[in-house]
Image (cartoon, rainbow, N blue to C red; front, side):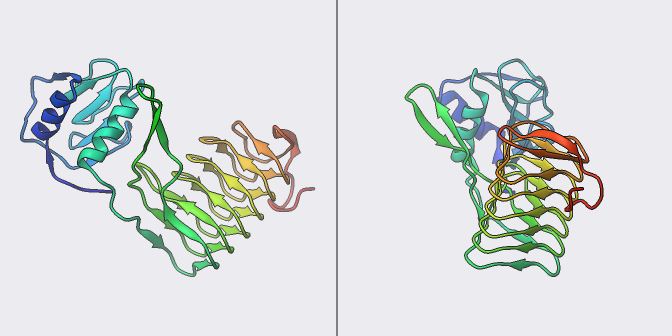
Amino acid sequence: MVNIEIRLKDILEWVKKENYNYELSDNCDLNHIINCPSTTVDAKVNNIAFSLSDKSDAGVLFTETKNNSMLTILTNTPKLDFVKCMWEFYPPEPCKIIKGSNVHIGSNCSIGGEGFGNIRDDKDGSWVRFPHYGNVILENNVLLGDNNTITRGTLGDTIIGQGVKTDCGVHIAHNSVIGNNCMFAAHAMVSGGVTMGENCWIGPSSSIIHKARIGDNVFIGIGSNVIKDIPDNVVVAGNPAKIIKKNIGLWNSVK
């Protein structure tokens, strides 16, 4: 995560220049340091964040409604305007690849590149790239096949759990968290922000929609298109993927 010391008054000057509506809290300290962006939930007083619905403890917050932040920027497009501010003050640093022991990476893998995150600016129809600050964590005994792509997180890390094995051509997108001992067959695709439990089997050429939550011991059949959350201990298959039976026995051996 980037860590740059930016004074709150510098951000306020930019806010005024861009003609945003804003509010300052009674305890606002214009010399307070805002040193890095954060997710809404994890934000503290030294962070800058955006919120689409929830309140936040961020020192600086882009949101639609009044908040108790030192500086609240009021906007109907908090995510877009947050991104614009990030490019102004917090350019991303290179991604770190954090590896555990006994990690094997196949040929022609791309690990740590930016994910496919873009925000549409409705004023002119252009797309603004979401800056990526997260790293990629490969835990112990991970094996990646050839031609894998694993992209870095945006405001958090992409995490590949202990003992995960992937075949050739697998793609795992930004902010995904893959549980221990999962197996990915060739050309499986995981969209951004997916949370996957332990001991899952992901079949060849299958895909998982962004932000889906996949339980433990899930078997996803070949060519399946997962478009919603999946509970523990089931076999799913089809387009869209549906539960067809319980996964009984070994997690990678459907019975």
